[in-house]
Amino acid sequence: MGSRAHAVVLLLLAVVAVPSIALIKELEPGQVWPERGSVKQPSDLIQNVTDTTEDAVPAESELEDAPPEEVLITKAADLTKNDVQKVDYSGAQVWKVPTDKTGVKNIISRLRRRNLLSTWGGNQTYIDVLVKSNAITNVTRIMKRENITYHVVIDDLQKRIDEENPPLDQNELELQDRRGHRMTWKQYHRLADIHGFMDYLAKTYPSIVSVQSIGKSFEGRDLKMLRISNGKAGNKAVFIDGGIHAREWISPATVTYFINQFAENFDVESEDIKNIDWYFVPVLNPDGYEYTHMADRLWRKNRKPGVVGRACYGTDLNRNFGYRWGGKGASNNPCSEIYRGSRAFSEPETKAVSNFIKNIASNFTAYLTYHSYGQYLLYPWGYDNVVPPDYEQLNLVGNNIAQAIQQTGGSQYSVGSSSGLLYPAAGGSDDWAKAQGIKYTYTIELSDTGKYGFILPTSYIEPVARENLAGLRVLANVVHKG
Ligand SMILES: [Zn+2]
Image (cartoon, rainbow, N blue to C red):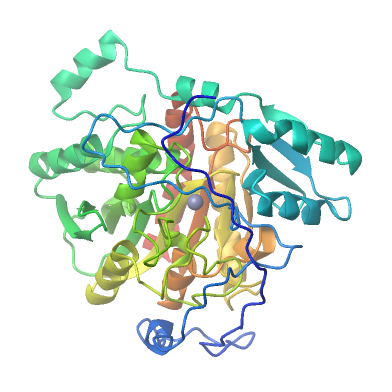
C-alpha cells in the first residue's frame, strides 16, 4: 500500500441509546396530508436540544448505508495545491455478505466498530462491505471461524478506481472543443465542467434556461441551480437534486444528462416536459465532489469540519434535513459517515435547498433525489418503517417508472418505502420534501447492484441516464396530467 498523508485513527465508541424526540405529530392512516407550507418545521423545535458527544449508533440488527464507527480521519486538503496526496485503496476488497443467517449482521457491526471494514451498500438480505487491505487476513479468519459465507466482488479496489474514469480519446476531445462546453457523458467531469455546461445552456437558450446560485457550499463553491421553463403561468414544478453524496458520481452525470436532453431539444420535447417548470441542482455537495476527485474517491459527506477539538470532517447532508432530524440511522458523532450535523439544516448546502423551496412560489409536485447504488425507487418515509397516507399512489407511480426503466435499458429497480425496503435513515431530503407537501417524492438509487458499486465505469453513464430519462418521462406525465 502506498504511503498515506492521512492518519488513520481508531476510536472505539460507546454505543448509547439515542433519546427519541417526537417532533411532529404522526398522521393517522387515511388522514389527508396538510397543504404545503402548513407543516410545522421541526427545525424550529429542536434548537434547544443539546447534542451529545456519543455516537448515535442504531441497534446492531440494523444495517446502515455507511459505517458510523469508522474513524478515518482525513486532514483538510488544500485542493488548490497540486500536492494533495490521494487516499490509496490498493489491495482493499469489496465483499458481498448474505445476512439471512442469524448473527451475521451483529458480527459485521462488530468488525465495523473495530475499523476492520466499512459498509458500502446492502438491503435486508445482503450487505456489501469494504475490507481494508491490512484487515483482509484478519477478517477472512473471523468469517471462517464464524462460518459466514461471502464472495469477493472487487479484489483490488484501487485498480477499479484507476480504471474507472479514463481520459477522453482524441475524437471526443475534438468534439468537446467544438461544442461550447466540456460535458460528454463519456467521462465523469469535474465541477468546473458541469457548471460551465449549465452556464453555456443559459447563454445559448435564454428564453427557456436560466441559472442561479441558490447559495454557497461550506468552502464557498456555488450551489448552481438550472431552471428550464416555457414560462407559462400555472405550470407545476419538479425539483431534482444530484450529488448529495460526493462519491456517487453517476448521480450528477445522470442529472446533467436530463438537463442536456430537455434544454437542447426543448422545441421537439413532449408536452409533458415542456409544460413543467424544471429545477435541477446536479451537484448539491460540490466540496465533497471535488474532494472525491482530488483526495479520496470514496468520500461521502460535505467538507465542513466537525466540532472544535475533533479532527473529523464532514456532515452527511442526507441526514441533515429538518424533518425528524436526529432519528434512527443517523449519528451524532462527527467522525461517522452518517453524521447528522450539529442541528437540522446546520449545513449551508441543505439550508440552501430549504430556503429555495420554501421561498419560491412554484407549485412543486415532485422532488427527485438521485443517489447510487442498488437500483431502488424509494418513497417516504425514511425515518422509520411507516408510510404516508398516499403511499399506494407513490408505489403505483414508482412501479410505472421502474417498468419504463426496464423496458428502455433492462435494469430492474425495486420499489418501496426507503425504511421498509432498506433501513431507517432520518434527516433525508426526501422525507423533508414530503413533509413540505410535495407529493411525488422519491430517492432513486441508480446502478449498479454491487458489481462496481460506487466505482461505476464511464461506459455505464449513457445507458443508466437514458433508461432513467424514460422513467422521468413517466413521472412528468403524472405531474403534468395529474
Ligand atoms: Zn447517496
